[in-house]
Length: 285
Ligand SMILES: [Zn+2]
Image (cartoon, rainbow, N blue to C red; front, side, top):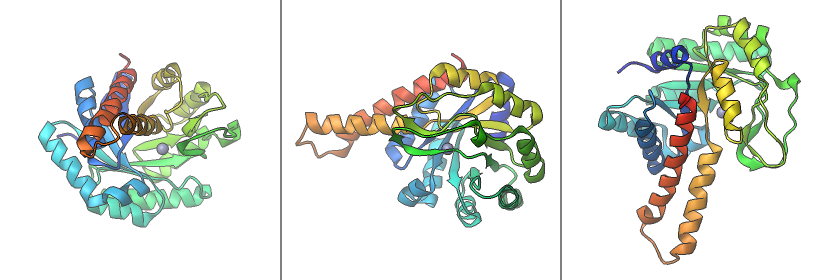
């Protein structure tokens, strides 16, 4: 099977995007993979944040992904989503992750570059197939439903800094900020600055550009970002909301039910519906 960078390149050439979805349990992981395959996605990225990895276990996550990749004969790639230290990245790589996001975007620029380069060097020394993502610009928010977040063009990734960052670190993918925020914000319209993003692509065309925080964005904004050069989209919070709400509904409808798959199954079905809809959007269908 080809590596993740190969599929990202395919997406770039085809002007579409590969989806990235998070999981912390086996049922959600399987739902994401089944939905991606059924929707005809080229490949799928599944991610664990540091918190999710702490819950499911890094080695366990890698083993589950490997088992499903074999079972489904389908390209599934496991990503360490926003890992903040070299030690955490190394732990994930050593556990068998296919991909890393070293997120040092809160550090001063030079420190961000140094830490990202350290992770890239380690990955290259272990396995050339590992894909590495860096992040530049301050991506606000969290994977929760929030009321309001202040974001201004001052928070955006600067085109010349992105070009410098990519040249000096050698990352495969770049997470950039151009109006996107993590999570869902209820009292504010989330809006992407596509024009600003296009300036980044003009300044540095080599990496795969990644859109984080697609939950809460309008479909037409996501499509416009893909058209402008995004080839990987992270979509998470809305999946969590759908999963949680359906479990809630099942508990209310069947208060005496104790068999986990009977109340988790319908929740996974809701996750699958959403993943299928998003993959169609990412593929431009
Ligand atoms: Zn993210």
